[in-house]
Image (cartoon, rainbow, N blue to C red; front, side, top):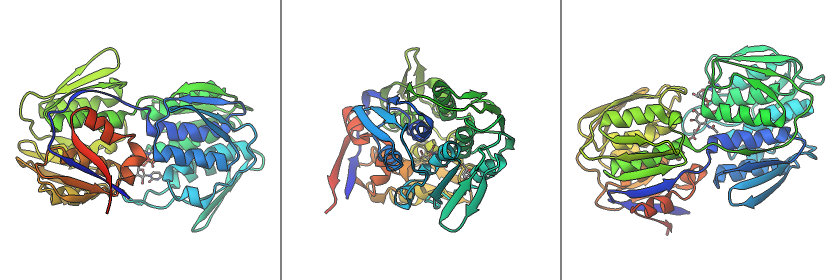
Amino acid sequence: MERIIVKKSGPLKGSVKIDGAKNSALPIIAASLLGTEPITLEEVPNLKDVQIILKVLQELGAKVEFLDDTTVRIDSSSIDKYEASYELMSKMRASFLVMGPLLTRFGKTRTSLPGGCAIGSRPIDLHLKGFKALEAELNVDDYVIEATAENGLVGKTIYLDFPSVGATQNIMMAATMAQGETVIENPAKEPEIVDLANFLNKLGADVKGAGTSTIRIRGVEKLGGTIHQIIPDRIEATTFMVASAITGGDITIKNCITSHILPVIAKLREMGCKVVENEDDTIRVYCDKKLCGTYIKTLPYPGFPTDAQAQFMALMSVVDGQSKVEETVFENRFMHVEELTKMGAIIATDGSEARIAGVPQLKGAKVRATDLRAGAALVLAGLTTEEETTVSDIYHIDRGYNDIVGKLKALGADIRREEMD
Ligand code: EPU
């Protein structure tokens, strides 16, 4: 087991290149199960979660080959299994995204139910509602879920009560080879949904309206192969923007689509940061004065992303004045509050709200990454502490950040990884 040790650094300066988006790569790799010709994916981030979903594909019979560090060739032409093992499914919730592709390709699938996790119970009712609407028969017990559609899925109109990212993706993938037209109303509009739709269309699918309030998918007989580049990770970009803000730094973030992070840019500006959007997919974040508190409310895209909430809370802990955070996407995404409090942050929570009173200085402490973004937030907070901050359980961080330590170090951070005693 390793830990990250970090202390007051900065101002961080320089430039950092953002990797491909984890949350785009995972569904697109799952969707590669639909292709009957080879698929090449570029800008695939080298992350634990990506390794897990690639293993799921291999276990199902797909051939997976890395052509270089970030380019993966997937050949699903000869897959013959439609059951994903409990062992891999239980390691990561996103493995459940293989269900839609398997169901539409084989007319049946059997997978384990994904469990709850640190950030909430995370049900899958909307995924199942979608499959059922497409005329799949479902058999669900405590651990296993079986879906069958012996004569193939049939397109329908499905209204999502909440614009769930995973449910939109799973239904979209299942609908690619259903008979007739599927309409998803109130779908998620995240950039990762648009990236998946673009990828599916390159395979030969007919998906229209991704990124809007209605997605229409006309089923086709068969999907082929393609070459596709994964979009940049807007949450990794956000994390480095906050790293600049929290250290009073001056960082240029490369490979970043600014239109994907408008609420983050707006909130950093409200807090007093200078954010310069350049035309070459780079963004410069620098601060020439003490920052002040603000209010954020997490929402489905294009609202403020829940995946950036913890990092902003770390920043709010050290700026002038009061801040407020409202988390509306997940029911329990304040696990980082207890850890930030150990570092001297003043945060009071009440249900889905947190009030933060900025302090002049956090102190070094031994803290635990309770989930991926919480872990990133603690590393960011650690960039401000005179004494060392030790972050344990960093396997959570490795799930979503490729070499965060190396990248921060290159910007001047006093940070290292080491084995725990
Ligand atoms: N929900 C339901 N029923 C469902 C599905 C979701 O009630 O059938 C609820 C969830 O319980 C949650 C809310 O809807 O309260 C949002 O869940 P959603 O399905 O949108 O999220 P997800 O697909 O499970 C993806 C990302 C998350 C990100 C969320 C929200 C991937 C692999 N994961 O999860 O990323 O927080 O969308 O944007 O794409 C992360 O990267 O740290 C992360 C957690």
